[in-house]
Image 1 (spheres, rainbow, N blue to C red):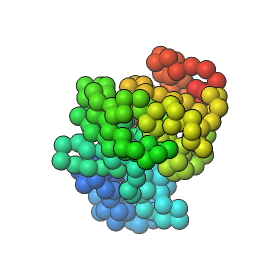
Image 2 (cartoon, helix red, strand yellow):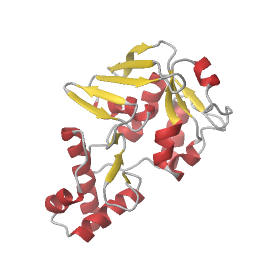
Image 3 (cartoon, rainbow, N blue to C red):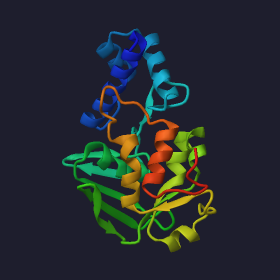
Image 4 (spheres, rainbow, N blue to C red):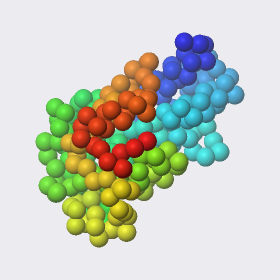
Length: 227
C-alpha cells in the first residue's frame, strides 16, 4: 500500500468511526489533525474517497454529505441502535446498518406514497418485525445508474412502500426492467458484500464480477440486475 493509499484508507476509517461514535461526520479540520495533513492534502483525500465511491460531499465543499450508509442530514430513514440514533441515506442503507454492525437495529420510516409510518426491527440477520407486513423496499433506478448522481439516487429512488398497491399508485413506479421490489430480508442479503466490512481499515468495494456473482447467488437475476 502506497503512502497515499494508506492515508486514504486511514482517513476513510476515521470518517466511518467518527460517524458511528458521534452520529455525525467529522469536519475536514479533524481529519487534518488526526492524519497530520494540510488542508489541501485533506481535501484531496476527501476527493479521492468520493471518486472511489466511499463518500459523497456537499457540492463545492469538503463537507461530507454521505458516508454510505450514514447520512449527515435528516432523512426519512431513521435508524436506532442501542441509545444512538442515525439517519440513513435511503431505505436500503437503513437495513444495511444491520449488515454492517450485526447489532439489533430498529428502523423508523414512512411510505413514500402515503407517508404512513413504517417500522422494522432487524436481528440475527433478518427482519423480525415489519409493520405494515407488506412493506417493501423499492429501487426505482437500475444499478447501472445508481452512481450517476448517488445523492439523487438515495434521496429519491430507494424508498419504502407500505404495500405493492402503494408502489403501483406512486408516480415513482417504473417498469420491471427499470426497477426492483425487494423484501427487507432480501435487502439484508443484498447488503452483505458491500456493507459487512465497511468499518475495516482494508475495506474495498466489491468488484463488478463479485457483485454480479452475489446477485445471482441470492436469486437476483434478469435484465435489471446487470452492471
